[in-house]
Image (cartoon, rainbow, N blue to C red; front, side, top):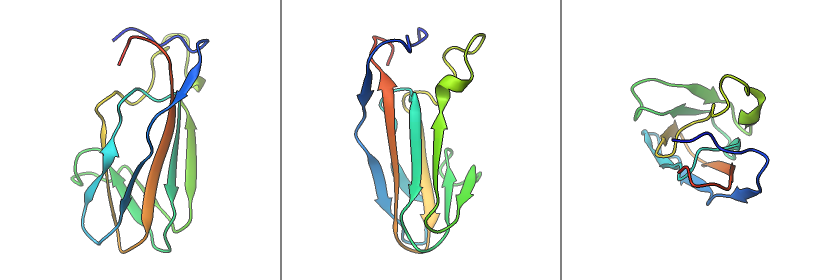
Length: 110
């Protein structure tokens, strides 16, 4: 994959979201490497997030918490530092909706 050119235009990817039901389930799959990514627990209970189907919890989001990652912050030697296209996020929570929104740089690198 070629390094994205962050000076190009940003595009909005389709939002990923799932209703939590107590078991690990897919929230969605990234179609592009994100430049900015927003994790948003819209529910009233904590949600565990995983990128390996629930084997390992990456982070537990308390009720109502959102996290914004700006993947451009680590540039220079890691100019393409981002989650890769095809990353599948899974979540487990008692109830509520968890969403992931992201922007990506226009290019030919998906």
